[in-house]
Length: 264
Image 1: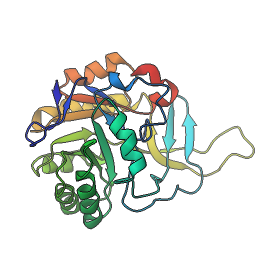
Image 2 (image 1 turned 30 degrees about the horizontal axis):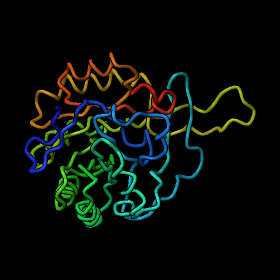
Image 3 (image 1 turned 120 degrees about the vertical axis):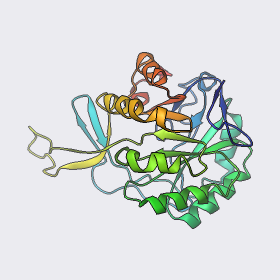
């Protein structure tokens, strides 16, 4: 077993150290005919929030070679922290369900965490932090999520590992996900008369993220007192094993699943 919450009263044990990253496989029903969920260690949901969020305006995807940048705005109808439709889907899944909660305000985060406490089908919360939070704001959000009774995993922004990972690992979190996809900029598309002339900004996915992830793991895993979930650019079992060999307790697979869901 692979334990993600060794100091929590309920724990969060996985039979296998692999799971989809938030955003990779929807809310649990979208990939039901494509993936054998029993082969996963856990299932991480798409981002959820207490209030509805709209889709980002303008282009949301730009592809460049083997990489692409995505900017979605984390759209969701809100209230998925307690909707019976979702909980019925999660109850049927054969693995622990980890709800990825968008950290907005401390008050909303606390309300969402308490709602999730009432769902027996939810095994844990992964708290997604914005890149520009101050350390004090991040601590406040973590404490708010802890008002529920589920283990709290915090997904650290790529650009904030150095200041937030050591800080939050001492604030009662069960585990850390290293990291959220890095922010990146792609140039305007070339060779097309109607190409969008603007630079495109969003989150970077693709194989180039893996060396950044491995560098982060090699620097931080041994210094942090909580289990680490590795996430970013993993495209094969060999690459996942490299993360585990660097000390990660588990791995998350992200955008490659959109192209090859059988990788799991």
